[in-house]
Image (cartoon, rainbow, N blue to C red):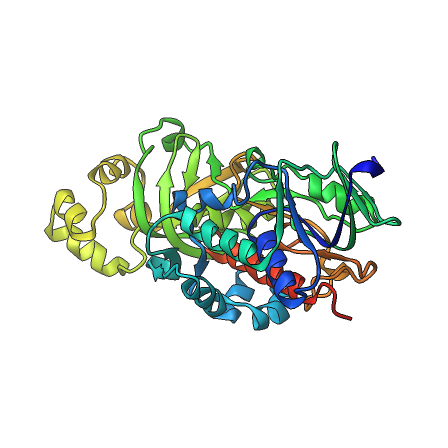
Amino acid sequence: MNDNLKKSDILVIGGGPSGMMAAYQAKLTFPEKRVIIVERNSEVGTKLMLSGNGRCNVSVRVSNEALIQAANGHGKFLYSTLQQFNPETLIHFFESHGCPLKEEDHHRLFPQSDRAADIRKVLLDCLDEAGVLLETGVCIEHLDAEQRIAYSSKTAYHFNHLIVATGGRSFPQTGSDGLGYQLLASVGLTVTELWPVESPLVSQHPLIQSKVLQGIALKDVELRVLGQKKTVLKHDLLFTHFGLSGPVALQASFSVQQALRIQKSVPIQLDFLPEVAEEELQYYLIHHTLDQLAKMYRLPKRLLAVLSAEPGNWGDRLKRFRMEVSDVRGFNTAFVTAGGVALNQIDPKTMKAKQFPWLSVCGEALDLNSWTGGYNLTMAFSSGYSAGVHCLAE
């Protein structure tokens, strides 16, 4: 095994957004050091290429405070890293490297080209120009903390500093199967319980089970998670054969998961016209047909036809439509993993493990998650930046 030992000053495990940013910033900050990224897939950025349906929703133009509030209870950890690298910094980074971004609804940022490949190309070009070494098809299976050696089945890597950016367990077909958590736990870090979030919602409601709503897509629906801890969100919604998908359902999945830990199902309430007062809606219905209502408020006629048979008045049907959520989809379809390395073990400024100064952790490997729509990617880039800049600093 030692015949194949490769030496690096800084070894980065994982070639996703946080790993590539960490490696690039480490090389810029410590140019005389040898930096190597090892990635288990045949190419880097596999999951990045799926973001935004192949368009790459690379970030979101919101304040640091908005990012902190969206981080599902762990946002305070982000204060320091967002001071170093935030949406405005990220915009400048990509645009200064020839990849201009554009802003769409809900402040989402995409490359103007609508090509995720252009985001990945910027990162690859930066790694190449800086002199970062990239080795793909390498799966690290064991860490020797005492000797500071990372072992794959064929090669071993000696390192002075290790940055783990292995992602979570969501979309395991992209290589994020949870192995990184096992590596980190093996050296003594605590990994909290893992569960899928930013995941579609499953419902046994008769209209869902009958599939009469399947395929209906709506803009800017308000979804309320009812119960002990109320959550109110507004974004696009898609009815599926199993329940609800689209950004607002994905964002609600964290609160739904928390509630499902103590109860069998979770009541939610949908407002299909959150910008329309109920008095206005009732007045309009007195003087107009359902077809006119559909045209006026840009609602699908099929939705109105189905809801017309539901009990209650049109206020109940359109602004207080209730159903029970019985589950969320699993890791295979979740966009994000909740849980990871416990944040009290990590320095929020440097991403170094407090107990092990030779080790940094960034990205989704941390117990840190947020919404789809650019929030999670921003946190990945930001934590990767901090991990790289501070990896060898005292």
